[in-house]
Length: 365
Ligand code: GN1
Ligand code: MG
Image (tube, rainbow, N blue to C red; front, side, top):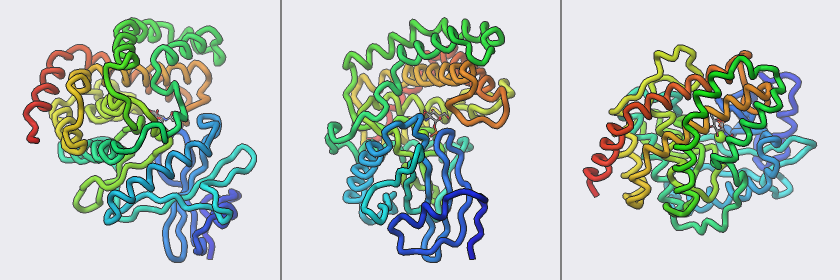
């Protein structure tokens, strides 16, 4: 009794190419990702997560799957008693299935878990940050050379600025005039953000295996205890700086509304969430951050919010080719939302920095 809620899609045929030993009962769209397509597959015996990888964004999905397989095996070996993400191979023993421009993969579904889109309480912030901190710690004894840099320029600020400049020059969607002022406002932060990026790039902080997309919805929490269980969305796990992860947490944890909120007066910085984020991460990562990493945490937030602002703006100028949108000005709204967050963070940056210092030094070891 197949109830496909995704009519006309090849999803059932695809699932059957994987080594599940199960029978499909239903398939439905699932999740909030802006890049890949995700489906929840209910089988007779188990539930699975099927994903179609966006091969424009990830041109070498096989490399991603090798990375993910290395990472998930490493974590499962270190904590076999906990729920873990597993790559389910195809019947031919491959880590995914490639057909035309599509690349598909299948995971086990982790039941009795939930994700958050915005952080409502300090307990949420602490738990989610601790989950990402655990992740850093769990991978800290894995040689970064074993992980391929699948998107080498992902957090490269000068590269992102060049992409914006190109989008302005080409003005493919004829939208530049509308966003000229916004471009000016955001570009005034460039020198300051480039300085932060260069510090990192010049080796002020160690290269670690980092997640690189630590928005709150990427950690699964136990649905009753709210304990962080599993970090998901491992496509961008690469050698990088922990500051990319901390920066993206600052970007997504501090405001009571997410990047899609059009009412900019709702964008705010909640200092209690910053405190919870830092103490949760510090605890999860077993206090392994260097002094320089701790010192740069707020700067990292600035850098990630800046980069996200110009990425949304670039995509808006290009005619929405990268991020999924629900309505035509959504990338513009997202860019404005992120620019508001950036200016709020910078306005009181001294306060945030002193809070960060205090929490890092007062957390119990
Ligand atoms: C994308 O689609 P999702 O949620 O995995 C993006 C992140 C952005 C985020 C903004 C590979 O993440 O870098 O921060 O949207 N991922 C990629 O919501 O570009
Ligand atoms: Mg992602």
